[in-house]
Amino acid sequence: MGSVVQLKTKINNSYLQLKNLVDDKLVLVEEKIKERLSSEVNLVDKMTEYHVKTGGKRFRALLTLGASKLCKYDKGGRDINLSACVELIHAATLLHDDVIDHGEIRRGKKTLNKIWGNQSSILVGDYLLSRCFEMMVEDGDLEILKLLSSTSAEISQGEVLQLQHKNEIDILEETYLKIISWKTASLFSAATKVGAILSDKDQKIKDALSSYGKNLGLTFQIADDTLDYNSDLKLFGKEIGNDFYEGKITLPIILLYQKASLEERKNLKFIFDKHVRDENDFMKVINLIKKHNIINDCYNKASYFINIASNALNIFEDSKEKEILKNLTYFSLERKY
Image (cartoon, rainbow, N blue to C red; front, side):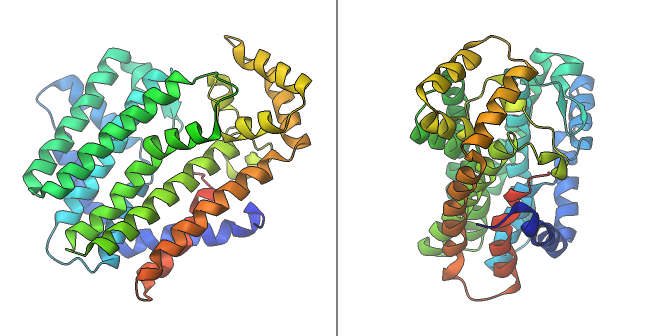
């Protein structure tokens, strides 16, 4: 499917083009998030302010804004409010993720649980979700309320399913796809579908944007999981091996286990059964991944979902928004942010 390096310029341009397209509204999304996270409890204020300052590229909010623009939404500021909702759901899951994974660094800064402890982080994550649901109720659209509520439930189920299969070296590829579909792709799907609902589009348009978002999310997560085992990843400025040391079984390991010899499978099982894995273990796995050409296999899997995501937009007339969103399907192959 071509090398990641060759796609790098196109990927960066598509993200920046989308950001520039809706930048005026993205500024308002940031303001809305800060406004809604204000609290009378000093510790909540400190923690949410710190979390907002850690940044992030607001990719999910951009998807909602971009999809709304593609659907020619022009009825006020509901796209801004609901983009903020999508970001708050994502932010809450990050706080909970860091507690579950014992995360200490995110986006180059200490995590909230590292500074203030697990209990406070969990409660503040719940606070973010509560604020989000307040905004959804204020919006008053029952279809959107149902969509984002069910999406939040799917994300939680994905987290639990992943935890259930942690260190399970022979996990089915089907189970892995279900995990990432719930945990990651469901929010991408909701983010883009919201744009169609806001614009009063028919069911075909809603389904098309839902499919686009879902398959973009699957691509996004597969690429991220793959880059975690890519020894050339320094090119992208992202530290590798995090999933390995946490004992997460992701697509590279699943495909490796399928291709490995009986002896190699035994060694892989031994490594992932260990309570703590070291750098020597990681290099053994990296060497096996190179031997069996697993990185290429993973990107071939990702390309399948890229094609579905791109084709889902064919229902729309040609436009600048459509072109940017189509190009964005390759964004996840860089996954620097």
